[in-house]
Image 1 (spheres, one colour):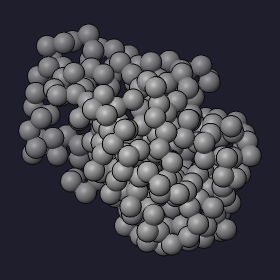
Image 2 (cartoon, rainbow, N blue to C red):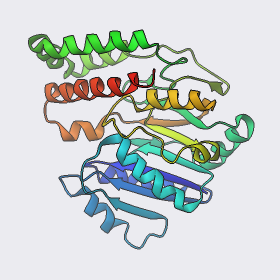
Image 3 (cartoon, rainbow, N blue to C red):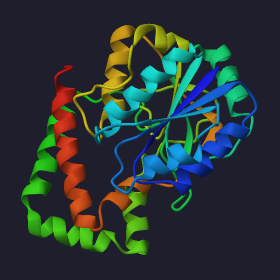
Image 4 (cartoon, rainbow, N blue to C red):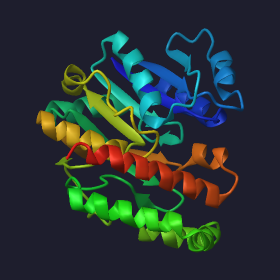
Length: 283
């Protein structure tokens, strides 16, 4: 049994399309949608749309609790099915392989991973998002990043200029390309430090050790960096597997939540600063 957990915020059609793809997958599965109190009533629409579908359970969160808490709610609900694997994925993921469940099992049989991430491609830019890093952050790196983010936030004028130019498609593509992790192509399954959070597979090895995957003190960002530290403390393995491939139509929910690029960027920086503070507590 594989349970798929989708955290939803303000999306309906995209989530419906993803769930229908999941339903069509070969293999035993359940699907849990956690709607994070979408102000546009997306959760109610999804609950009505999937009413009577025994494979799909829609949970309506009574507040927007963010990425970590929202996915933890879905993960805890998934454990009631006694799954072999729990897959946490964004609503803006597009599946490419109908034998996805068989592929997940095959990777586990070979590598006995606790957590696994696939090849995640942003089709609009061609950027590959996994793995984020081969190694964990040093404490000094996090402090340096924290300092740089605070400087960005303090320099309002410069930040407004940067976000203004970021809106233009060509310049945005150049900017995103500059943020690429520049990891070389990996053919075999490889142990890595930090995976991307858009599509994450948790095996029964992980489920035995953790009642929930994410630190509930974060709202958005750095969840996977913190998870990587917790895995290392338990001596568990993270695997990147390019044999599984998905598309990630990035930031659909975030774009819908914020009309302006500047407001979205300030939201991102503030939450990243808070998450780095939480992450530093593990060092």
